[in-house]
Length: 304
Image (spheres, rainbow, N blue to C red):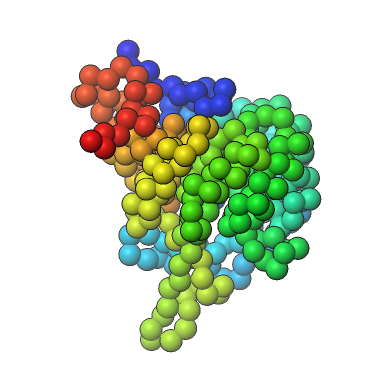
């Protein structure tokens, strides 16, 4: 028997494969393709304090080996999520984890406190790549002191597993990782999208309405792997890795670099079965290597 289960800060995931926030909707959109209960977890799209319409179109653009997006956290707010969405997704048979976003510390705290009341949501993923409107739009996740402050404020009201998603748009990812651990993070998710842009040369105009957006997909995988490996050496909390994962080999590389689990993001748009195929692929790899427990891969990278 092959053991695929992993323990992440006390949460037992049936396998190390989950889906990334913003790429899998609320999970309902994929039930015609497969049973979400086959995955270790589902990270649903961002929830904010109130309704957000998102950015103007166009807000997605294809790039070489990836895509740019500037959707802008479009959602109907935490009240709508609690009242309308949660009842429909709470019994998926896997861990449903909510991505929590905000423009102020008070908004983060408000959303986290509401989600804390939901019995079948065992964890939240704090998205600290959001701009702090009280400090001129600077993202919470680019300054260690701000990262610690928002994490600690949420930690004070959120009593379950607190995951914090890090932005790669920083000079030192390890400084950010240490900052959120100091603030009380139980788990670190990395990486979020890289800042990029795309230009229409014929029109001599940016393709995205916001000019810049978040780059995801295979193009960012080497950066994500490097950051997971660095953070694994710098902190003691479990890591969830993502960034360009499209197959089982990609996922295994992240486990070897130090991630305890992975998220599939952009690949969901290409093939909705990617995540379940990765589960099967990891199991096949373990059988081929005569490895009985997936946990033996975590941080097992040989550097000498």
